[in-house]
Length: 277
Length: 346
Ligand SMILES: Nc1ncnc2c1ncn2[C@@H]1O[C@H](COP(=O)(O)OP(=O)(O)OP(=O)(O)O)[C@@H](O)[C@H]1O
Ligand SMILES: [Mg+2]
Image (cartoon, rainbow over all chains, first blue to last red; front, side, top):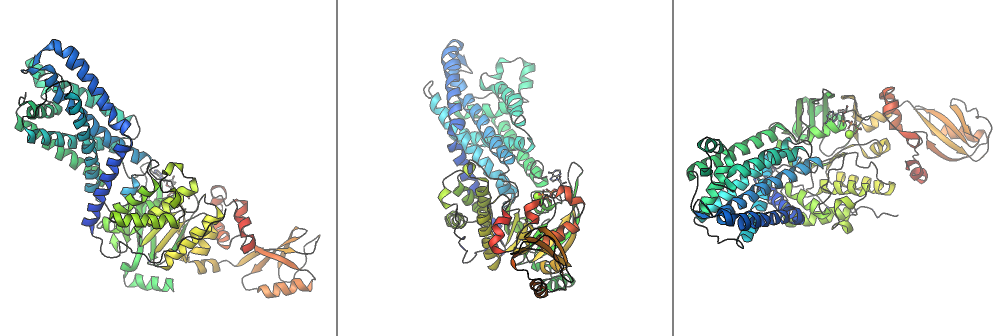
């Protein structure tokens, strides 16, 4: 094999010769991460978009049409209508969490996260990029599940602003939670423990399938310690106009979770925990 | 000239001109291994610098700290005057790095890998695309642009990582064993590319186990062993520290015992080859005269080992024998151009 000589560079632009414009770098960098993350979701759509569509269709068939018909009403609406917002939120939670945890963790495992770590991007930019990726997948799945739900029940959106803000904020919260999980994870086991042992129970008990008014006063108090309950109910309030909990409290909890998780992630990354030897 | 500038720079604290400045850099890993025990290093802007050392010496650790992949335990790092503790982002913007271990997203398209990397350094997408094309072409990977990194051979992956490190045209390029596992022709082309880049002003720091590579490319050199710098000088003065050199001469005549050459130590290798030790002060002309007087004809000549290798082995002696694998072909490496490709096949 003969190799031609490498093409000599005529000149170098040296993007970094002047004082680097960190704002511009971070802006371009953020766009780049978002584009890359969205491309990743689309590239592996069979793993990212199709499964929630299938499982949610099954939920609607079984709990909505078959069993729901016997349950009748819950909180004054047909059972299928009651669970629709819950199932949408459940898919948003699982998918935004899952997107960030697998993307960030595989970057760690395959080492290509280093591409970002050696770059001048701030950790705020990196976190934001991954969160936007998680939110995009969460919302894409939300739209798909809403579409599926529309075959089983009449859907209306009573308060669009609340509906949209709650779903976006929730997707952000769980993208950040997924990021934290990925930061601490050392092995594949570590990225399935949280979804299985924490996320799934909290979601199933978070008022997706039932109103907490069905619970005894003691268990109602216990249920109120579950942050997912507030998100699901706030979203249901946005769609149906009814909720088990005060909407202001729900926003308060969501915002506190968002800020708390973001600052924790930022602190950990700055300390190099989980990313630097 | 470099050392002069260096010492003046140090006296007047003109560190702003240093592409890289390390002061008392220490690293103790979480498992208690002390990888660096206080390293001082200065690399001038525009330099071509070799960081050498046996396996486990701490080269990758130094690079890891400089590129923000490893937390330092203590010490100072500045890149073009940007202190890593205070202006980390600005420092990072100046660096391009080719890691020792492949760290490619193997499912990503090769072209996207470059475009993304440029994006992380703030290069707008349209420019990033041109840069990706420029450097994929430079490293002969343009026809593989739509392939994913997983489908590349080991040497291609390494070239892709070089292209990736260049895509934002950094002021300081750091390469951790860039030519390991790369075939001879590609290695030669890489050398040319690195020289070209250095000629247009890019500061280059590389680690390598091919000492011939360091000798032919680099102007300044540091040898690190067990976390300490044991030699740091210009390449030429390091080489001149060698007092003697051993040449292997191939003779046209067939001989049974080593000829006696006045003033030279001679060993017989086989019936056509002798080894001659030449002191630094002795001239090769007089050696050839002596040989001619004996009625012998030399058909070719090569050094028995790479000169730097000789020095390296002496400095890191004993400990290296087991840890540092120069290999037979390394010791037999030829400086003669015709034969060089033979010597390098390892
Ligand atoms: N992540 C890590 N955790 C613990 N110890 C480490 C880690 N990385 C490197 N070391 C140790 O630090 C020392 C220096 O390693 P380093 O990788 O810097 O050597 P090197 O000079 O690059 O060697 P080589 O020529 O083999 O690449 C070694 O003893 C190594 O085992
Ligand atoms: Mg190394």
